[in-house]
Length: 206
Image 1 (cartoon, rainbow, N blue to C red):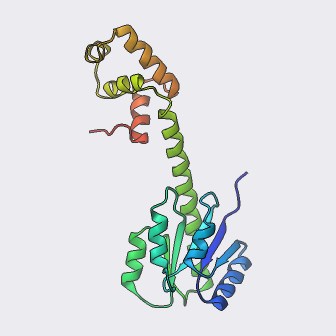
Image 2 (image 1 turned 180 degrees about the horizontal axis):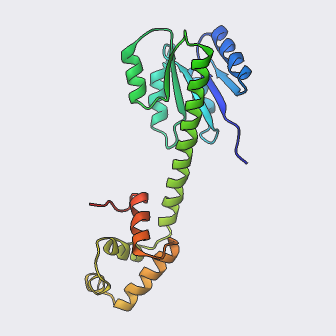
Image 3 (image 1 turned 135 degrees about the horizontal axis):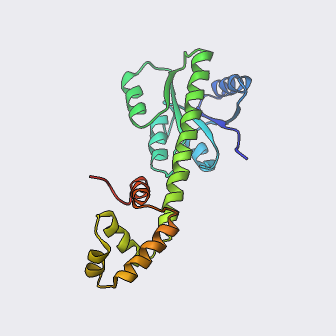
């Protein structure tokens, strides 16, 4: 069962934090609020879907610094950067670091709603990509070293005869290893093997 998204909000202004939380919950989303970046990080759970709304200007750790920290993790939440200042350089930096959106605190309810919708959609897409990447990593990790050696040469377009000569094994052994690796990867053709290998980052075309 897919979990409903939660909107995490980080702002050092208690009154503002409360007001935006109430507003977002009136739109139908569940919220969770934090008075600082450190408070958010202490409970961060990458398994929870949703998005993160960050205030730029906060003591100790600001919104962009928190964004930088989260970007280093395997699964970074979708982030909406919020500021009370019309700072174009800050907006550009936030977007370059992968922010889903950037809002001034003079935003309208519609702008906030639309930004959250986009961030949730981005979060869902990121999670799907992460799940696929994890699946592929696990899939290829099933291969033995010997099977991986054969795979690399198959992807280079080498014949079984050439592979056998280079690896100093019999063609029958090459055929057996090819069959096993394709079975483990659940592919039936070399074309499918190449596509899967490219997607997994095991091999690059060109």
